[in-house]
Length: 284
Image (cartoon, rainbow, N blue to C red; front, side):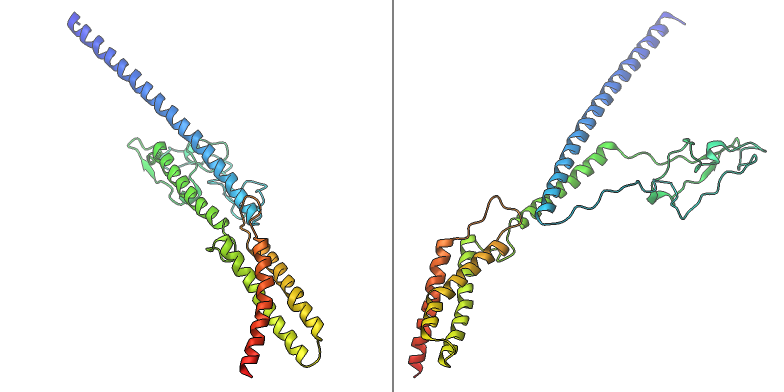
């Protein structure tokens, strides 16, 4: 070998070594980035799980009990299925020659044999065929290439984004009360107190009719109209707002507008009685 050929070979080897080092550095940086992305995604999913637990406790949903035992793993039969055990004597597998054991390829379901990775449960039925080599040895056909971790990580990140979006929508719904969810707190309180006052007005008409037939005297009727029925309407509205006007997730106690409710109830019921008297006199 001449000196020029030796020098060219040395340069080629040096370039190959530098290319290998560069590829190794690039692969190492890629792995570091993947590990960092996986750690970040894990922290994000943990925070999502905690937030979902808070939402479940806020709306009164009990958490499902943790599984006490692991189920059948991929490629593992359940209790109702039993794999046939290996024969006691020497067996002949296709393409292995006379009387020789097929080894790991001949017993893929045997415990302790790690020649080929087990398929997931959904892909167990897609067992790869056995390819026969020219030498006559039975070897499994080439399996599909493994998925790209970066692609899988991106899919997981998109699913986490979708979970964040749905979680935000759930939080918005949890911050709305059951009663009149699209109304403002003030409008809701006015509607509730006015509705309770209207219900008290119905009771007032019943008392007026009872007073007309002599079942209730005038003093009792006046006491109920001026104090009893307005107080019943006020406390009824207060309880309704506390029960159905409170969001599932809210910081503190929502306002119930007690002075406004007191004013509405103690004005509407006597005003309803006065309107009833004017209506009766007008009809006469």
